[in-house]
Length: 129
Image 1 (cartoon, rainbow, N blue to C red):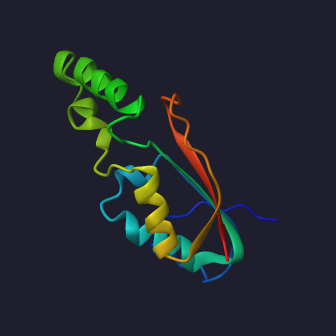
Image 2 (tube, rainbow, N blue to C red):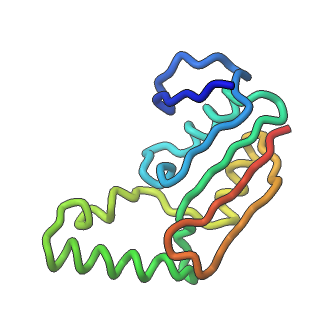
C-alpha cells in the first residue's frame, strides 16, 4: 500500500484511484469546500472511505464560545494577526449541513460522531457507495 500527500484541488490524481482520503482541520479554511468534496468523490474508489474532521461551529456547540474567546484574547488583546482573522476560518459547519453536502455528492454516511463537549474537533467517518 502507498500513502500520498498532494494538493487537494490542483493535482493530477486519477479518478477512482484511492481507497481512503483523510482531511482534518482544513475544510473550514477553503473558499469553496463543495469543490473539495467533489474532488474527494472523484478520486475515491467505489466503497472508498473519507475521513473528514471539522469543527462543528453551531450556536449550541461548546467549540464556538471557546474559539471566540481564544480569538478575542490572542487577536484583539495580544494583536496576533492569525487570531484577528479568526484563525483563517471562512466556513462554518453544522452536522446537518455537512452531512447534507456530503450526501448530495454521493457519499453515504457510515459513522458520524458529533461530540458536544469536544472542544477541538468533531470527526465524521464516511463511507462511499
